[in-house]
Length: 639
Image 1 (tube, rainbow, N blue to C red):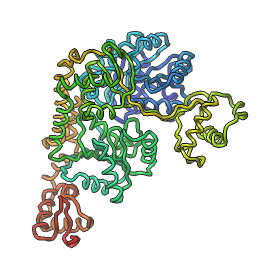
Image 2: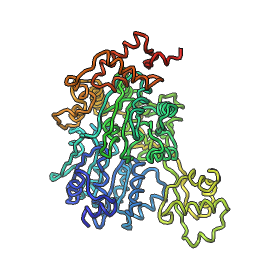
Image 3: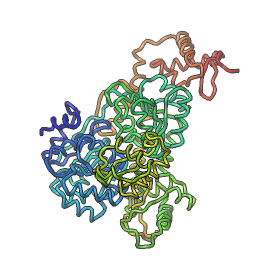
Image 4: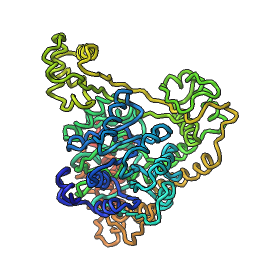
């Protein structure tokens, strides 16, 4: 079937997005291919369509994000495409069922976590399969110069060895020229390989940096003057709740999201935001990957990401429908110091790292010489409490130990509940279950298709609401059905793990070489300085500076960033100071509770300087008052 017909049949689209067809045709012709496609560019289509073009054989997709893996497998199944996944969060029965499907040719796609490739037996089993395409998603993770380098990705080269003639498709949303070249080198791309790069320009997004000393109030005023869905990114879980509650009290529909919430809570909040029941999501960077919401009009960053790669990805979740949108970065005097402190905290001294390694091995009860390629549940909160450690520095030490090849802390192992019915339909009419278990079973059959052929993710809270029983009763009913062997029930669990890459060594022999420590310190330092330069250097268009960082030359200004807007001052007709005072007075009447100078000036571009002078005049003459950087007219002063 022709690729356009496949796109229409399974995805319902009439045409491809830019570069999708080029990448697909390159892959089908058997060439190794690198696709650089910004967030929202439609990466998954570039390997899912070729996977359906091949009449037989398997497409292997290596991805580090288990949650994204689950969503893509579910989406393919809904389209009638057979797909399975293998990751560390699956039990023995689920793994066996997945292998049966693969070996019997009943799966077109296999999603696998990079950690699985470290197992020699697993690679041997893969070598016997008829593989047509190898896909490396988030391919920047394989580069030591990438912003999210993961040593487990280096094992993908082993997969390449067992299938040397199979083309490789590497995909990433953000990569500097140095990282792009390293990806192709690490994956041993052949001479006839192709590289396709979509422009990083997003002409419908206005990139703005606003000086702010009272960010929570500025977030409110920015959102109050824009329409449509929005995301506010912060770097701490505590702030997500604080800002969301402030916005809600202030009349803006908002909720919060971070990795510490339960799976059910995260899904409920994400779904509410996606369908428009909640306007604004205040979140850490745990929110956003794999979310396809086209009508996000504004993304606000209250805190700085540590690199332009991450900022571009997160800001790029605005305006995927091509309509006018905004990406606003709030910058305070302290943000430079905060980023540079993060750099120091990310590289604790080597002796501290060795101590963390020794304590972690003791915590897992590993003797010298034990632990090779073992996956062990690891409660990091208990670990830090036991040894009186700071979580942030501990994670930094684990990250460096991972880079050095000693162990990997895997936090994303949360799995929601799954069930599979193990009897045929006829037997269901003769079961001797309790009334509650029977109600639960009937609800499962109504709400979740596919239960007789595969494990299906379920939500006990949703079942509870549907049948009017409390969650504990639903849970006990599922256990009852499991005991009667009517179904297999795998309750939800959240168990971060530690993968022991090599047998335990004496801590004095743990080596964190210069390539891992000094070289990566320099790389991270350059990224942070590039982020600081983007935010605080007003000499030149911000979009041009960002594109230059990604190796793209654009000689003209964007015309929409805050710097380009300010340049229009010279060609504009300025109002007099007296007229500006009257305008500011009238504008402030719209905000009896007060407004920040930043928001005020942003609404008087290109006369923001004159607006600031008018504000100071009103304060000096007693017509307005200032309280903690919030300004309001004196007649509204409670005193």
